Length: 138
Image 1 (cartoon, rainbow, N blue to C red):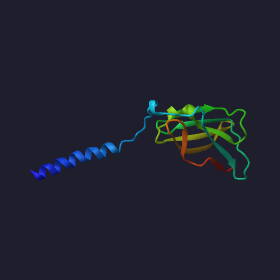
Image 2: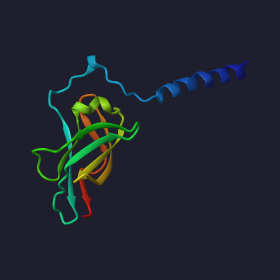
Image 3: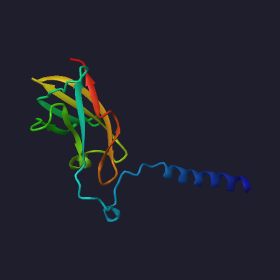
Image 4: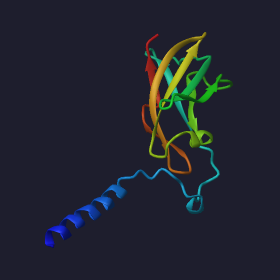
């Protein structure tokens, strides 16, 4: 009888541990108290000689699945300063983190591919992994 009770306790206990390992990736709107500020994460891209990199267009893709999050031609931005992601694209990424790839083009040629991990706190996007300053060779 004690052996059956012991085995039953192990089985029930394992369900609790399995339940605790689930990722919480949803945001309850009723519990959110977000600011109205639109947060944007930018990166700076420069050459090894510290000059800014001028790009004609950028594409930001979610690595899995391979889908576009943002496709744009940088306009009226300082050279070398580019949008990575903002709160407007928050629904495209996982709260706990999504791998995104920044593709930069100059004269139709891809000159940079850089991977970042981004997530959010239900209100604003966050850079979880990756350097905001990227240096490339000419």
